[in-house]
Amino acid sequence: MGDPKKPRKKYTTPKMPWRSDQLSQELYLVGTYGLRNKHELWKAHTELSKMRKQARTLLAEPPEIRIKVEKKLLSSLSRRGIITDNKASVDDVLDLTIENLLERRLQTIVWRKGIAVSSYQARQMINHRHIMVGDRILTRPGYMVKRDEEEGVRLSESSPFRKQIMST
Image (cartoon, rainbow, N blue to C red; front, side, top):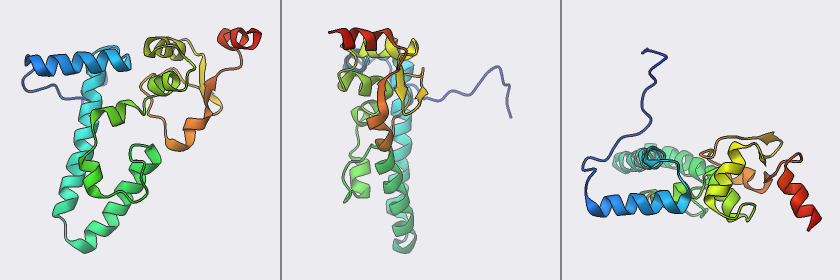
């Protein structure tokens, strides 16, 4: 079961962490999406690798099993908003990039909707309880927003930012 004070890591680190091209790519992604540190980036990488591994093992399955599991996988990714096309296939899952996952984070969606000026301001607004998804206030910038929840992302009623927008 493990020690509750020492939770298991949710990410894997790069095998060659000091490659200059990898360092510059990581730094670009951390800066663009306003991530706190590289651990958040590595979590997204790990989640992406799990999805891609599931798609690869699915390709090796016999056709009768593959059809059922493929439909389930694609519908799950479509609900989460990672795959946009209804006619998606397993090959589309293999073509996913880390940007596809980072675009689904609450922090990025708040920034892209124009509620915040930058990704860093979006992170601050989420942490300070100014952002609502549906009828609940979320304080996790890394929350993966589902496709049906995306329209419900807005400023909370008690936010001073709302009062600023109303007065102008």
